[in-house]
Image (cartoon, rainbow, N blue to C red; front, side):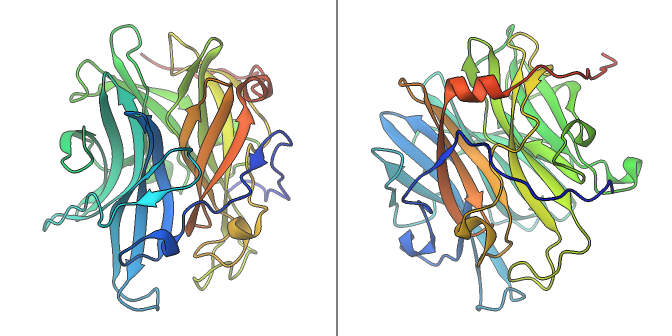
Length: 337
C-alpha cells in the first residue's frame, strides 16, 4: 500500500440534489435494506433505474445476505416510482447473486452490464432487454472481472467496454486497475488494453475501476471512475466491525477513436464523501460509487451514485465544467498490442 491519503474534497462545480438521497429502502414496496450502485439511463422517453437491493434475514448483517435488482421509472430523473417486484434475480447452484448493474442504450435496446458472484469466482456479464422483464445474456467473462461499462456506440466498427480485472496472484496485493476490451458482436471479447493504473490517480492508493458508462462529447469520451484509498488506522466506520477504505469518484476523458487512451483527467476527486448520507450512518461510510451519467440537451450532466453502500444519490454539473476539469495527462500507458 502507498502512503496514506489525507482529507479529500469534492470539486466546487458539482451540485448535490436537494432531494438527496433520491432513493432509499423506504421507497421500495418489498423487502429491502440497502439501495445503491444503480444503473440509470434514458429509454423510451423515461428515466430508468435498475438498482441493487441488499437485504438480510435479520437486522444482524452477519445473517444470510440476499441481493436482487429493482426497477424504477422517473419523468424528471429525481422523483422515482419503484415497480412492485424485483426485475431480475438469478438463482442457480453456481451463481449466488447478480449485482451492480450499468445501463447503456444502443439501437433501441437497453444493454445491462452486471456482476455475478459464483462458486468459482466473480464474473462480469452483458445482457440486453427491451422491457426489463426478460433479459437475454449475451456474454460472461472469465473470473475474476467486473465493473464493466459499455460504450454507447461502436468505435471503428467494434463495441468497447471498460472493465476491472482482479490480478491478485500476479500482483500479490489488492491493487486493481482499469482496462478496455473490444468486441465485434458483444459476445466475443478481446484486444484487451491497459487504460489507467492506481499510480496515475493522486487520490487512490488501493484500487480504481470504471463507474458510469461513458458519454460522448466533441472532445472525447467523458467517463467517471471510482478510486479507493485505504488507511489501516481507520476503525469502525459503518455497520461492520471495521471499514478502512474510502471510495471517491473521479472524472477522465478518453480518445474518441482510441478509447483505451486517457487524454485528460481531473487530479482531484469529482465527488468525495462529505454529505451526511455519504459519510455517516450507512452500511459502509465514506463510499461514493457512480453508476449512471446522463448528458441533457441543456448541457447539464446528471451523475447518479451509491452513497455509503446504503442509498442512491444524484449530483449535477455542467458538461463544460467537467471537460475543463480534465487536464492533459503527463503520463502515457504502454500497450503491447
